Length: 551
Image (tube, rainbow, N blue to C red; front, side, top):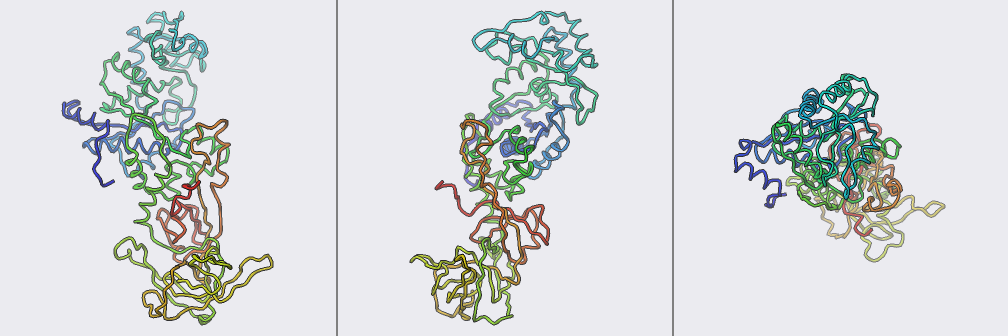
């Protein structure tokens, strides 16, 4: 956005720290995704925030994978995350993994045991939950809480050596069972998981919990501003307690409101469910809110960064309308997308007074929004054309400025034609429209003196390329699925994808994946990754106007 804006609360914090010389004026942020799924638009907000803060204050950002749960993590997700961050236009100073620090984090745990601040607990998960009490009643200790330092060290070593099955024991911090913050009532630091890790293999069978690994990883990297979403507010006490009791670099945690968007699910678990149950094609299905899905649908990095800039950074949760994201991509593509003609619901138009077998090349600009039109292209014209079925009406109302018996219209970049006749099939469907053209009315050289109010697009029948066109719409039919009863899958939009056969200009056979095009009067589209020169496939990125306003 070009207009000046006031600082958000995180920028105010950073500027205050710099003024006070905190950390030597250094700014180091991190983006710490768990590699258990593909990134979505909510992660894009966090990426733009962390990398944007560092860039604004001449700092750096680390990309750190929070790979502490080997059961759900995979190298595929690691690679997809790196590709998404780069595609958004950001690069990281260092690529780290929580697993890089497993030895150090284990040593931190041993140190806390030696200080009498951690103990091995043999209780089941259900027993631990019960012993923690309730928000209004304090928790109660168990016999394991009083184990000696020596016994805890021996048991923790045996846990590491694989002597116990999953769930047999955990390591807990000894904090405060009466704390008003339930998370501070002796949180679990380590659990036993005999699972193969995507980087460390079978070296470890115990893994640190997020709350024990995260703050320590920040501290090891000397992160100055650890920014996370509001659901981690209650975790901040733990973050600070571990750092303080270990006496390590005092990274600080700050929270901002996560992105909630209408007609969208942001839960990785639910998105994985859609993929696993075959309700979408894959993580990059163009209906998915994943960054890879948005990319495949034709969204640009600029439009997503602009969206994140517009919604801003707040301390309070709110719901962002999906139409704002669609506005941002329309605004971007209007300036950058080349214009082409495509007929999505074709009916044949025959120009009866145009010589049979004659062809000519007409000129069309690539983008009229840009001075000079960004060059142009030749458009073949012939006696037979495809036009949109909706551009003809047998009984046209008074203000219908397209084709009907006796009506005249301009063919874009071409001539004015007049409808003389039409043909129908046995069911009453229009099969062919017969027109005559005005030779003196050629666009750019019009000497006919005739003025018409309507212009329609077309594609020459002998030159047209056939294309499969996927018309994508919102994945969900309800604005806020979290407020609805039952399974979120009950609210999937049955019209989120329609596939049609269309005709496009012949030069569309040579376009590249990733380039946006405006199909004139129809919307913005891009070539799909599955497309081939002989089997063209286009995805609709967004319509020209917000069709959901009236809905």
